Structures are given as C-alpha cells and as structure tokens.
Amino acid sequence: MRPEEFRRPWLYPKQEAAIYDPRRYSLIEAGTKTGKTFGCIVWLIEKAITEGGLNKNFWWMAPVYPQAEIAFRRLKTYLPDSYRSAKPDNTRLKIPIPNGSAIWFKGSDRPDTLYGEDVYAAVVDEASRAKEESWHALRSTLTFTRGPARLIGNVKGKKNWFYRMARRAEAGEKDMGYHRLVAADAVEAGLLDADEIEDARRTLPKEVFKQLYEAIPGSDDGNPFGPLEACYARLSFGKPVMWGWDLGKKQDWTVGTALDINGYVCAHYRFQMPWPNTIDFITEKTGDVHALIDSTGLGDPIVDALQLRSFHNYEGFMISPKPKQQIMEGLAVAVQREQIHFPEGPISIEMEQFEYQYTRLGVQYSAPSGCHDDCVISLALAWEGYRRKYMLARGSLRETGSVYGFSRTVLDELGVMYDAA
Image (cartoon, rainbow, N blue to C red):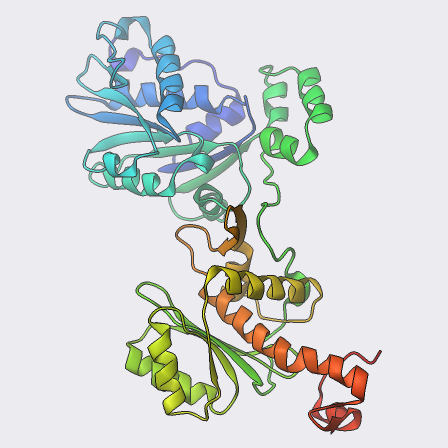
C-alpha cells in the first residue's frame, strides 16, 4: 500500500472533527466508549503511514504500561493487512511500519525514560490520569519535529493538568482545539445503546455518571474549604490589625497577608527577594502590627532578625503537620461561616487547589504537586492571629461587657464587628 492509497475508516462527524482538528493540539474530554481511543488509533496509524519515513517515531502514551499494552494490541488489529509484513515487537511494544517509521507505546509512570527521542506525532491516552511530568517529557520530544498531539481522556475532577490545559484550549489559546464527546453523541452515531446508557444512569452515583458518560467534572474530594464565593470581597481600605507571613524557600514565594478589624484582607504581597531585602520589606510593611510568621527551618533565624529590629510584635509559628492542620481547619471554619473575606486572584486560586488526605499520622494538608500554597498559609496565619486576638475577645465581650477594658460603645465606634448575643 502506498501512502496515497490509505483509506480512513468511518468516524462519526463529531468524532472525526475532534480527532482531525487542524490545530496542532486537540484536547478531547470524552465520555467512556465514545470512540476517542479508536479514532486516535486511526489518526496515529494514518500519520505513520502518510507522513512517516526512515527512523520517524510516533508515540502512544498511557498512564501506566499495562494500559499502553491494551492500545498496542488494539492497534495491531486495526493495522491495514498490507502493513503487517513487519513483525511487531511485543516486548518493547513497537510496531514497525514498512516505510521505516515505528509506532511505540509508552507508560507515563516513569517520566525520566521519555526524554531524548524525536517524535513526529503523539497521543496521550487517559490524560487526566497520566503524570504531568510525562506530558512535559513528551512535549520536549515534539520540539524538533513540531509534531502534533492528541490529548484524550475521561474527566477526573478539576485537580489535574489535563483539566487545566483543556480550559486553556476551550478559551481559544493558539494552536489548541477543544472538543467534548459524550455518550449521547455515541448513541446518536449508533455506537452505543440508549437503554444501556439509561441503565448506567440509574445504577451509578450521579457524579460518577456525569464524569464517565457526560464528561462533566465532579467536585473534587479533599478540598477543606468548600465554596469560596461568599467570602470574595475587594481589598479592604481598613488598617491592618493582624499580619500572616509565609517565608519563601527556594522556588516558593514570600507572602504577607493582613486583615483589618472586621476580618477582611486589606493588604497582600507576594514576592521573591534575597533574605536581607525580605527582612527590610516585612519590617516596613508590618510596622508595629502584630504578626504570625512562619518559623519553620530557615524561618527561625529570620524571625529572630525581625524581632531584633522591631517592636517585638513578631510571633514565630512552626508549620509542622499538627499546627498546620489546626490553622487550616481554623481557616476552613472561618470560610464556611463567612467570617473572613479576601479578593479573587492568587489567594482564591490556591485555596481552590488546596487539598487534604488522611494518612497514618493524621490529616495532611498541602497544595497539589507542582502548585504553591504560600498564599493559603499566609492567610491561615493571619486568621489564626486574628482569631486569638479578636474572635476570642468577642466571647469575652459577651461574658464581661468589655474587651481589654474597651466597652461595647467604644468598640462600635472603632467599627469592630462582634456577636451581639
């Protein structure tokens, strides 16, 4: 068979439009059994046959090696008869093409093994479950060839690189196409039975059905804060009464967040500077206002340096697992009770990504791999200091009628919000 004699199998219109999108990258969020895998097998075979040549490589990458083996077996079945003269390598998962090119099948579980090759076209299968580092490696192999890629998969929540990249494609980023293939499309095309889909709808949890059959991401488990919208507010014009400072180390940021008397964020700084400049900046911005500051590791001598040149208003806070759990749970309660308010932007983005998981040592709070949590920690420190000084003080107001000697009338004049009950 000559390349010009290749005949593309029938694909239903939405399937073909998604997979043969003329843009370099096509990101396809798809329901299960909607034809995304078969369509991409056809696409990769066609690329290898019509654009291949001596030593040209084409890749199929799955989350793990056994999944790559499944695609390997399927592609062997679909390969045109006249192209089966070259014997597939079942050990290395390689299918030679008579024109000198080869289709390889890889797992994303060992990113370091993916660098170095030149790849002329690639498919990332089940991208929402593949390692982001492996996509980085694969993308590097397409640099010299400027090869295209098809990224396909079921949706799996919102906390993965495929979801974020799909949103960029959906927003119209250059060279990126975005498509959704859902069960209804496959039913309309005659690939799936409507009764089978309805049975799945009845027997599966609602959120699971939406993700697997309608390509609608569910709410991510593991976020401690819940919905944030009720806490959004513009940066307050009030004066700071409490600061939280998280100190940047290596690639992290130093972040300072201040709350006003009513629990609204009124100042927020995020930067990377040498330690002497950082100390000067924190001193200038904080003034004589009380501050909780991260004293973990290198933070301890920084706190000492700040205390030497300040009004002794800096309180070191060790961000070890147990104290971190406490301040994160305190911040989560404040968010859920709408006691704290902050602007949309870096703070809200980090809070949306933040997650927790149960371990044998307790609850572990952290940002996902590759993301930052500096803004979240800074806000949590500010809230912890605020909670101690003002929220607990409101309880004292209810019990004694005064806080630190200030009457209710004076507090009203200062604009302090407190529980009147």
